[in-house]
Amino acid sequence: MLAVRDLDVFYGAAQALRGVSFDAAQGQVTCVLGRNGVGKSSLLRAIIGIEPIAAGSVSWNGEKLNGMAPWDRVRRGIAYVPQGREIFPLLTVKENLETGFAVLPRGERSVPDEIFQLFPVLGDMMGRRGGDLSGGQQQQLAIGRALVTKPKLLILDEPTEGIQPSIIKDIGRAIGWLRDKGGMAILLVEQYFEFARDLADNFAVMDRGEVVMGGDRAAMAANEAKVRRHMTV
Image (tube, rainbow, N blue to C red; front, side):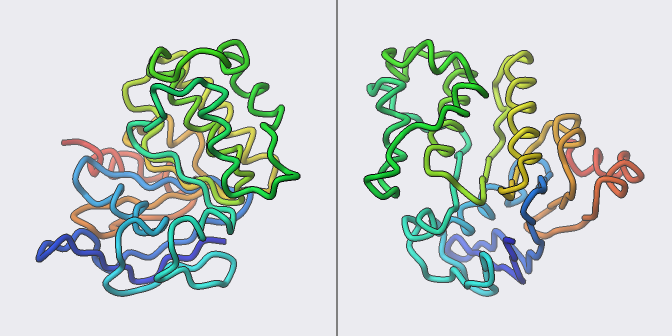
């Protein structure tokens, strides 16, 4: 389980996160929702160690991660799919996937077959450069690259952004399949309400750097209008 407690993050004098707390459990999808600029990406960057924490804590399976380098967090089973995908455009699909080998022992450095089952297009384009793929295909590649590391916590920052509807459905099915396997906690930041609603086991809504709402799937359905208001510009 991921446990975030009373998290504060600053950019200079500006406070990006104020006392943020929530959990993300194995076998569940936890969605963090909110409009642009409320601190969602800052939260993920703090969890993976890119942004320093001013106060509070991030723990994974009971181990506090505060001050731990990002690569050490990856070795503990945490994988991050950033907003904007950030694949390597001049590397082939195969080479992009193989960058995930860096945290694996030499005997485990292979691309799992399940990645090609989830995203068959990647298997068809192994020799193509990442920059030649469509936005949706690049998003599938970014998720596949994260899965190569064999994560126990998969963090996705707005995976539907700028993606065509057919691939959004493919990504949603992939997330649901990974959740249903039961061995992974999934933390999903999203602005597309319907996508989040269909996947979320639990949710947290952020506004101005704080969690202002949260609960389980039933609570999300019961408070849909209020949740949508927090996601509307």
